[in-house]
Image (cartoon, rainbow, N blue to C red; front, side):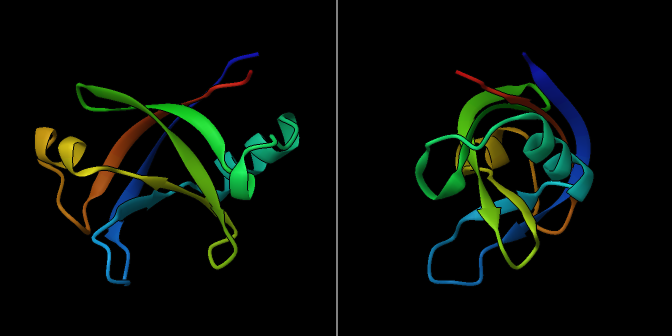
Length: 100
């Protein structure tokens, strides 16, 4: 079963010491993932995904976040540079859940 989602989300920066940038998945996407797929054995409840932003596609994981009650998608520096992404802007994201 392949689950693919398209949505827009704001790019934001983690407030800690690290310069990680994230997009928070919309609640409806998080709810659909949780309802249609069993929790994986991956660490911290993470889920493997393939992501496309603009012309850049990469594989990573989304991580559950209790504060937002959603998943967080890390967006690495190479993607932000290639796609000219700026903190605070809305990013068009295509996310495919990788089910093993």
